[in-house]
Length: 242
Image (cartoon, rainbow, N blue to C red; front, side):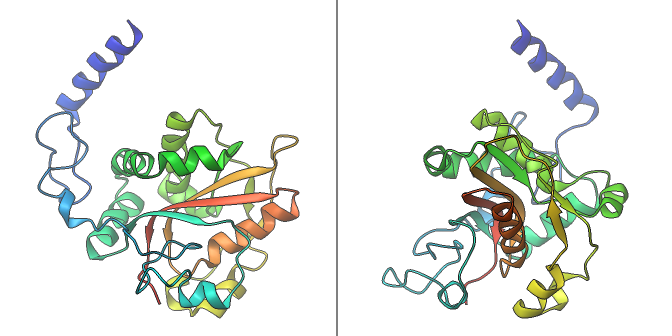
């Protein structure tokens, strides 16, 4: 009865606020889909061969790691990335962040689960921690996209979201203007320990985009300093391999 009521309520809401496609931004047709069938192919799913640490594409199956991960030790176990961060993905996430199109994350959360259900169950995280944004940025946007993504994953995994697991204490300069070394330096001391449930040893860290990995690395280091033993990460998008 409850599910039927939710379905009816959802249909009524769609009449007044029809769902928009995360790629073309038009009303999704047919009803009930999360993306226009013709737009799905404009996103680029990550397929093998891929780096076993960050998930970026590599040149051949014989390459275990990309150049970045081959040079730098990572504090997280590995990153699961759903799509390549191409122009289409950039426009879509700009819609989420700057035009309040958080409904797009319904599609992306579902895509992440369908792609990585087996790996996520095997990792068996006890909580999902979203990468936090600075409070001033969250006030301006009205939400944290990583937090919304974490909620979508939690609904599938039956694992709680720990929104206060990490705290963003420093508003950093835009990362896109910095090289990898500057990015990590920029993020140093940007994150502070929050509060995790007692005894948590395995965490899934959720974020929208992996470029150099500096943000996830800084968060993973903070979580491990809090006593977490294993940090797995999931991002919707990953940059091109190096």
